[in-house]
Length: 99
Image 1 (spheres, rainbow, N blue to C red):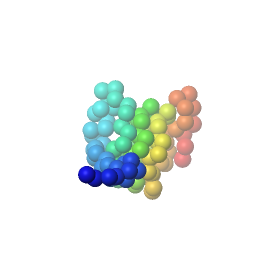
Image 2 (image 1 turned 30 degrees about the horizontal axis):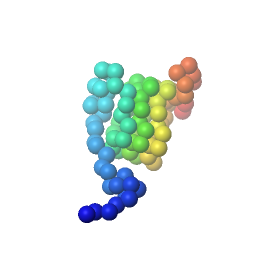
Image 3 (image 1 turned 120 degrees about the vertical axis):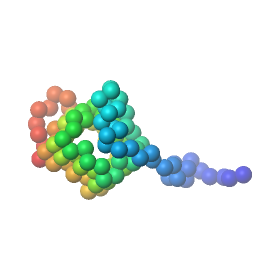
């Protein structure tokens, strides 16, 4: 019998990898929950992703240049060296562009 604590099990859980094309196709079909995926190094540059849920994702070195990210959830996402230039962010009613 293996005796492991919850903490150890969560660290061992692998994140499923998805491509940008898969995410965009699902987004266009109305899906918004993309939590807990491994999206390291993917380029989402220029895509409209408002309201998407990327919580608990690995987004290290992901490129979001020029994206509309209004209302997007990045709670507990790992975003080291992610590129977030010229994005639209904040609430759905915010019209500012962040550079």
